[in-house]
Image (cartoon, rainbow, N blue to C red; front, top):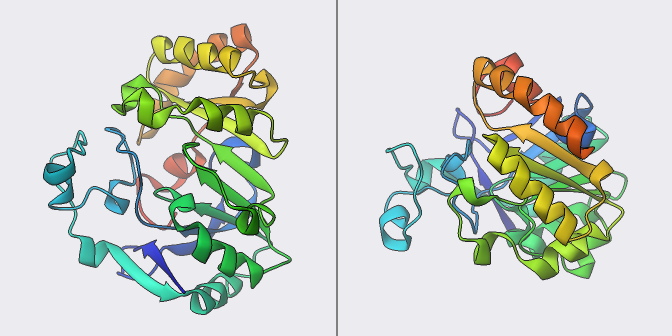
Length: 248
């Protein structure tokens, strides 16, 4: 079985070591694997090269705020599961973050991969619209669930599925991260937290932005809103350290 991965700047699979930049594991040393393909289309997505492909945007109506689209060939690579496992193991890390795109679109191959690495602690970053089948779910230690708010440009009937949000809210492995660009986004996130009984202590608010200046500006007004709602704030360490670049 193969996995379809995003590519780094060399054209190879985007598998690398770094510190986790966001959420509850921020600062931890990890191996990252970025998978290609997504079932949503966020207008501000900072990994649009995983889904905003030439032809798809016009055919399927998948907008992004940047005009260029990406050629599928240079931005995707398919590798056998065993080779992916070998590459990850070569980084010598004990914790793996599986990100995308939307990783759960490749659940069967991902389950096969994780069975080859039974001692790895595994985080999956997901938009919360789908679920892992049992064969994969049993291998996951942490879900980083990032429901997409209205400013993402996704229709709520696609991005905010009540059944899935309720299920993740009741999963002790799940943490929630809402990307926000303005105070109105925080109000929307707070309403979702209430309506789906998401524990506020497991909620992060993260400013949208791909440069340090934007993040710092938004964090200044975000702090009092975190205090008001009892939410945590997530920075984006990798942006401050490396900028908006692949493989970091």
